[in-house]
Length: 190
Image (tube, rainbow, N blue to C red; front, top):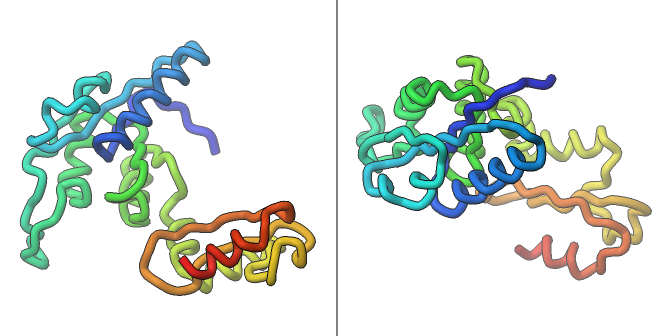
């Protein structure tokens, strides 16, 4: 499903935001397009390069708030209420989250979809399926991608190297038969 949009809110900061701003500029030049980047920022970053370099900027306010449910401090970049208000103020048609913050939050992708905002990345259902290690293994099997062949050479093709335990981010990597066996071993032990 293709969506057209021009106003892209950036739900990230620093280097991540700058990478997207540069990519959007290059895209505009190469495609005679007019994407507009909108930096969402917290008060300490109001003079940061990513805020200055974006086409527009919308403040999230203080960098942290007290979560009304847990009573713990949390970043405004992961508070859906703050983000939803900022996206509305930005008149965002799309959202780019980069990595960290809400990049792996299926609920945030759902929030964007429900507001008619394009989430540039996997939708919430895909995140939930890939976030569950057993479900993602079944998906790989359905796509006929071996999930733990002894080596890429033994698999006769691509191999999916993926953690089966732990709490880190979902990282899946296709390994070609030409890659040395040590890469698979390295994935197993990291």
